[in-house]
Picture 1 (cartoon, rainbow, N blue to C red):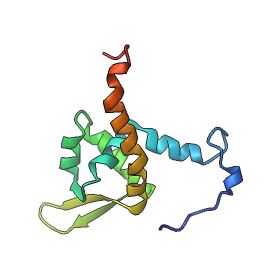
Picture 2: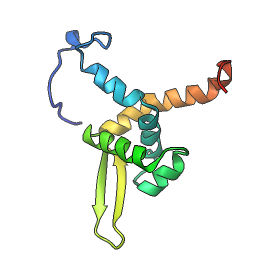
Picture 3: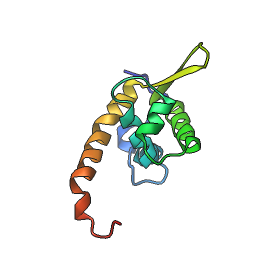
Length: 121
């Protein structure tokens, strides 16, 4: 289990409060591409091209930004292997694997209920 970077007393955690850092975590995880990128890494280490292929419709620029944001927040790791050409793999951290549990439930719920939303194209 990762050591917390800072401590927020449980009584002070209120995602509805503008000053609560929980909102930053919610913003990170509720992003469509972040949730999908984490899900794409559940099976194990994956290279950039494989993630891009899995996330149909994402541009390389957006995927790079998403992966950097997830790495910065310690949800994934990026490992560079010295080879020609350069070999880079992305993998979930323990925190990332933990986040995949509720995100996976949400993604499954969306797939099961998409037809219930009448105004979608």
